Image 1 (cartoon, rainbow, N blue to C red):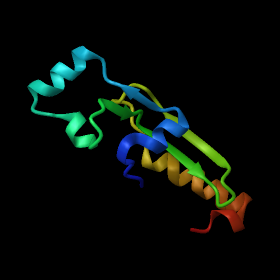
Image 2: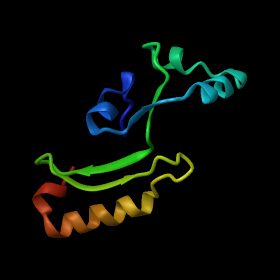
Image 3: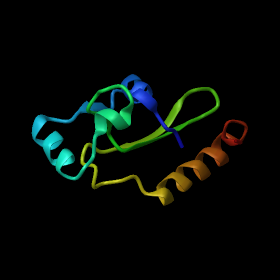
Amino acid sequence: MLRDFGNRVAEAYGIAFTLPDDLREIYRKFGIDLAAGNGDGSWRLPVPARFVIDRGGIIRAVDADPDYTHRPEPATAVEVLKTLASSHPSEAAC
């Protein structure tokens, strides 16, 4: 799990986006000040995503969808980790 202040990691992986003005207004109507919450004045959010990265820094699996209503399923991550553990046991240990 990662809390990505300033969306620096999301930027590095190319999954950060800026909310358009119409969505900013909707957020404001619900009392959400994303710019303040981000702590950097930006209206940027990451695409919901999961990356499985082995100890060698190799990305073994990615699940990302710009539609925030489609979230990565935890069971899928477990299956990826099981596969990684069986095929690369030294890299899967955490």
